Every structure is written in C-alpha cells, then in structure tokens.
Image 1 (cartoon, one colour):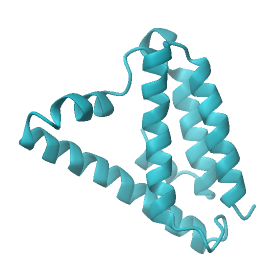
Image 2 (cartoon, helix red, strand yellow):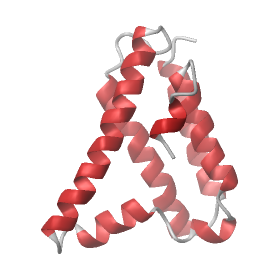
Image 3 (cartoon, helix red, strand yellow):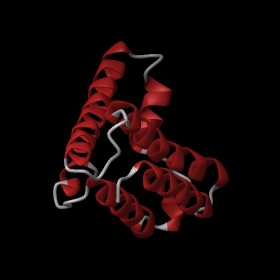
Length: 130
C-alpha cells in the first residue's frame, strides 16, 4: 500500500499525497471505525508479547526506512528542500498515517481523515522545492 506504489512517481512527495488520498477515497466508511491493523496490533500486543512486538517493530521499521529512502531520493532530485531531514520527515509521515486511522477510529467519521490529509499536504508543500 505504501512502498511499492511510490516507485511509480517521479516526484515522491506527490506520490505520498496521491497514495494517501487514494487510500482515504477507497476505504469504505464502515471500515473507518476499525482503525489500522498494524497500529491496532502494535497498541494491543506490543506490551504483552515480546515476539509480536519484535515483528511489529520490524514491519514499522521497514516502512520508515523505505519512506526515508524515497525522501532521500526526493531531496537529491530537487523535490525536497535540502535542509529537510528525510528520516524525521519519514517518521512524521508514518505518524500522520497512523494518526489518521486512530482519529478515524475514535471519531468514527471520515471527515477527520480528510482534515488530517489536508494538514499533511500543507506541511509537505512547505518542505517541497516545487
């Protein structure tokens, strides 16, 4: 859902936004209240099962590393301001993605997804060179 589709975009910042918008638009309203399976498992299982925590951490770390790699490329290709730390931005993007699901689960309303998407879009526009 996140890593492979970004390879299709010349501008990874545009790809991140388009991929998130696609996820938001294609998720049925009834699924909003379920949250993100990865986030749900992390919150419920990490504290009680060390093996589960290790596997969830590996998955999340892979996600962060891949987003960071895309952002490093974005910076070298001139799509991201040079002073931006790709790792910090990757952590922010993943946190927003997970937060979108968490807030949707809490509010049971997709409107919050659209609002948080707009906030991420604004932030990415501010750190982009284009």
